[in-house]
Image (cartoon, rainbow over all chains, first blue to last red; front, top):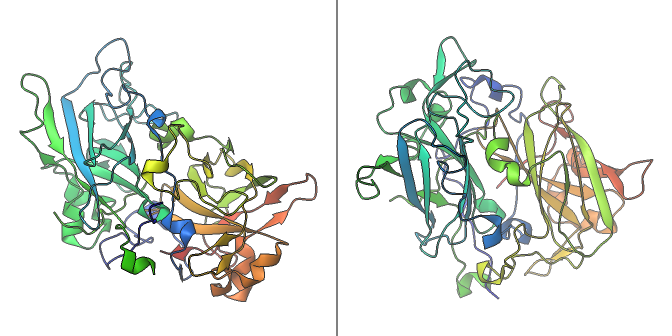
Length: 235
Length: 189
């Protein structure tokens, strides 16, 4: 039986603080009392691991879930999920969701006055392979306005939810697109003080995965907390 | 490529699009062993207003105190959702409810024993990073010796305790308060 991974503490500035006043929704939802330092017990070092049947073969193609093709620029999003030791995380469940090309989510609470696309739901799922690789086919999401402040617009993004090995590796994040002029004004993207950590949320344009005459490639690599435990550490 | 973990971003208000496969206000897990246990409650913000767009994930041991997936990725059954995992979204009134099996006490590699508990991960719009807390069960004899429960100042421990509901057997009540005097204990991981 393999040992559950071990986890280091988070390095200052590389993750957002809970209270970020520029992001107004954090004001009434961020904890105000000091957090209590949790020892890493089996309850955190283990975590849910999902089998192949959690994902259908067509789940990673967001352009083929309806009778017609969705409107928008087709994109291929690829990347690898690695742990802090640089090793691939295989069998990681990735769930993605996004707005359509017009910047509208298929959700009852999205009041943005932009059209829904009957051929786009914006939901995808994949498991990483033995090298930690994943691949989604989709369309580029549109930017959209939101109520955070006057004339607030979210840069185009795809939401990612990832289950690695161990509950402490759990991650929900957002992938952005290179060169987006809205990034510098977005309080959610700018909640991370470490500039390098922040920049890594922006995918890179990728010729290698760009499919000739078909779709543009964007690469987004993800690092999850944790590394394999060594025999020394288990003693 | 840097090996610093990728930064978190909020789950936002529309997570049900992507998490819908395992997401409802009432969830029953595939956990095994133990007796049936139901936990229900509400998520409340700093103004004590219900949070209608939160999602909780729970993770816990089986009735013998063993975790599914403890054997690593090679041991995973082909079956979809692992035992002891559940995902529950709050409804428009900020309420959630799930049914699972009472976990056993967990013996750590160093011999310390953790009282029966559920690990809880909480996501919502407004949280740029998820919150981590735990549910313990009132009346369990192991609580007083639990190595994590004992790290919590006395006056805040009640926020981690699910209390027995008067009406239904096996039902517990547990609320999440994000702020204020009775703010739930959250952990730095």
